[in-house]
Amino acid sequence: MAEIVFLADGIAGLVRDGDTVALEGFTHLIPVAAGHEIIRQRRTDLTLVRMTPDIVYDQLIGAGCARKLIFSWGGNPGVGSLHRFRDAVQHGWPVPLEIEEHSHAGMANRYVAGASGLPFAVLRGYTGTDLPRQTATIKPITCPFTGEQLTAVPALNPDVTIVHAQRADRAGNVQLWGITGVQKEAVLAAKRSLVTVEEIVDELEPRPGATVLPAWAVTAVAEVPFGAKPSYAAGYYDRDNAAYQAWDAISRDREKFARWVEESVRVPA
Image 1 (cartoon, rainbow, N blue to C red):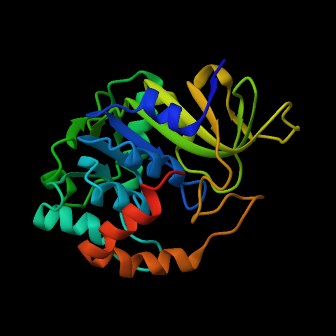
Image 2: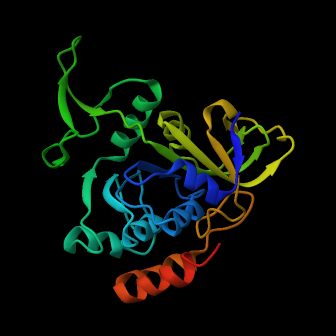
């Protein structure tokens, strides 16, 4: 059975300096509130993992929480670049950021391998790209049955995976629906996990295919209404497109960003 916790207690108990931390969600159900709590608690030296790092990772990087990013695509969806990410890579501000870049397929397969207890995954997805020349964790491998040249990538096993979902019951069974990414695999691959949800209910209503994380797979659950904003939660609220557009101007300037962190994140939630 998963433990029901407050968000601040969940982050304090599960996320430690130096951890490898995955905050997963695809287009919607992005665990933004949890990311802000990591900033509030001033976690540092983190290796951040995410298939599609967007503005919450820009914020974590700009706040000095990260030393490394393992990712595929990164950007402010529909707007442009992540300027705090670029500043960290290009100029080492506020701290230098190491990057490890993969394809979407490579990242997904790494989570699946981690969730399956396997040391690596095999795929064709890097053929014709120069990523193997840039990323040490992409290696050629020969199929022992056909002799075909394939690519191997190591399993991803985060210390902590954090995801957001629509609801959970008091035992910690989690329902999640709409556009999904690798949330299930990322949780199953992790040593510890925190799921933030829009609401905790006494009993989950039947919804085919929605209960993707049983209580035994989850370490802790925290009720955090609007915990994905400015992304969206299907059935609860829409995407705040204006917030993504506003972030572009905020993130371009170090001083403006620093003010935003102090005024919008570090204040008590």
